[in-house]
Image 1 (spheres, rainbow, N blue to C red):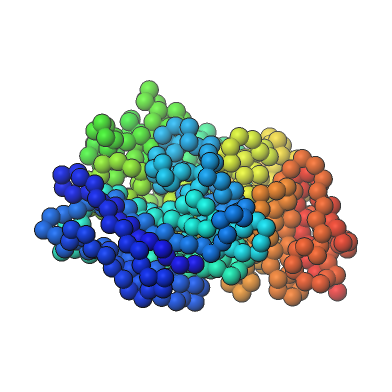
Image 2: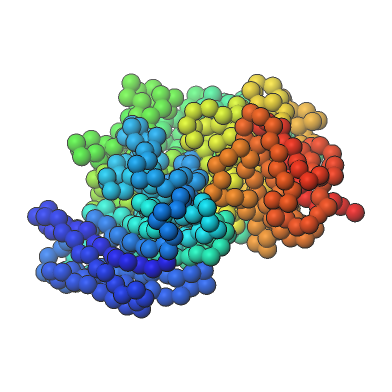
Length: 628
């Protein structure tokens, strides 16, 4: 792989557009180009995982310039005539990630979606025509020839300062793009952009792990929290949760501690007086947040609480009292960043994006989360719908990028909550949270049904796809949160096989283990399933830094997906049949050793594995060396 061109796009104070394009030598240690006293400079150096390209922009003129984007074009070394596919990484927690064909005429399902849907799942609500959504990945991309064993990665090794994309217009080249959001570069100033990692010569899942290791180390990822087990109110009660229902489940969890050993009890959406008013509760919670935290702690659990810190509704006290704290649409109105009639009693059911570039709002965040932790007693905080802080719009401080805005908001929350508080990000553009959160949701919501709708809609099968696709992030960027196990056999459309598949996949990923059922619906069978999942998940998590679970084929999009690790007697493979017909898999194709192996469903007995393993529809099977 080699850099073939760099291009800076910018505007002057009168709005006139300009560009500098530079064609560096084939191999360069340092090179630069200048136009009208604007300079771009770049250097490349070897790294343990590949080559790292660093670039800077210098304004030598007497006037400010306004930066649009820096483009770095890279020759992949792949043949342009061969069919190819690329790993398209999603923007935020719920955005889908997976393999797509490299087809120049491809269209994407979001191209005709609403602006809010695109704002939610893309770093740009409207992609420039030369960077179509169907060929554009967020942060990094892996390109692979489908008829030859060749794969390459181009990915940014930092995310604190800019949002970044990688577009794959053809197998032979990629265009890595740093989004600079029109920020000014003052006379005499220099801006260094996020470095670009180029890597090749390994399987796609290994390349993804290398990238995660590089960016995680560079951004001081928080990966040391213990394995997490907990209960969350959302997937049975949703926003109808009440104080009485929470208290009933708390009593059940205390009484059933041996059957369902866990540490965290987290109250989710539905308690707040208004969207944006997180310290006050509604009529369903007359005792208030502090008393509930005291009761959770007295029962022997860690109190957890959900908030959406960068959103507010029209009828919130925050929006009435602080109208200047919001990102603005070009019309001058507050920017719409979500829609949910359950969040407000106002006829206007939109949620509006708060502006973390505003120091006054950041001071509010620090005070708020300091109070939630130290006065109210919540030491586990789920932060949701975080994409809103990075939405395109007019900000209080036009000199910082959207990425910097989001990160400063998260830093204010961490400063208020304290270093010891466990922070779980959700609905978050992923890179900007590295080094701040302890855990991150890595897929869409699970649901009490198998699958329907688009790849980012809540469903069990879409959650399974995300667990496999982003498995490489666990213990490199944070603890992965694969979302909740669905245990209940009543009030659900999931059958026993499907519930077991979700449970097995969460366990095999080594990620967090949360349940979210009305505990009165659970009995001995569910307790045995939970304990088995907790044991397997803790075992895999404990070995993750030595031998991580990886996607069997990160670039797959077929019926069977899976995870595997090779570690002698600790070798293990998980196979998931996503589709509606029986599928067969050859044991020799799993790459986990010579055997002999056993195979079983979660909760089932181990039986010797034959040359082929049959997997029923919507089922999962665990394959591991036979135990003596």
